[in-house]
Image (cartoon, each protein chain N blue to C red):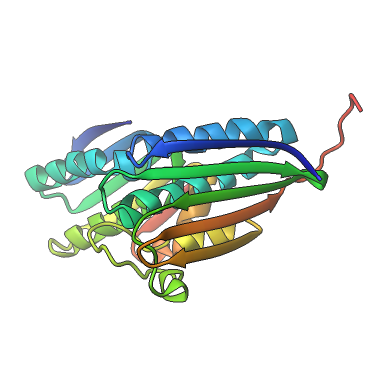
Length: 146
Length: 103
């Protein structure tokens, strides 16, 4: 059962990379995560949002749609969606070190998301946009206040 | 985000601080590259002690400096890496290119 949810829409400005990961991290605090879990989530969110800015909209302005949901058993579900160019070959895009833009992008965005979250699912349609679904179960720690 | 450069002999040390992402990487890169170009060091040390957050943009930054230094034959070290940053570096296998030290 869903226990809490927030959604936000932002423009694809690079300044918003830090804003989104800070907002998601603040929302996740209610699950009493460890510092490592917070850091993992922030890093994964940063990768997903950067992908929207660098790849989906290619430095042009568009909207990024974020949804964060908390379910029973400390399960966090994140959805990061854009209406950008879409991905032609998702499995190729997810290969470590593969990048289409060159420059100084490492091509490790999806690898980081895969490694730092429990599950990742990518849906994309060329010309329509991409949605990245991420989940992570936050460890339940003993709470002296019950 | 800030970069402080220290030059001792042929060693350039860049003390990085703040959050390293796609938004801030460009400015850090420009500051580091300017110091490399000016001093032509034999060793470049990137000190991550003050970095509070890093995503794969940081790996891109290190890979880019590695490529630049390959042209001059200089070494690249990454030092004082906090645990959360070290985890991102380990995922990338960057230690094959640069000496990686945790804090």
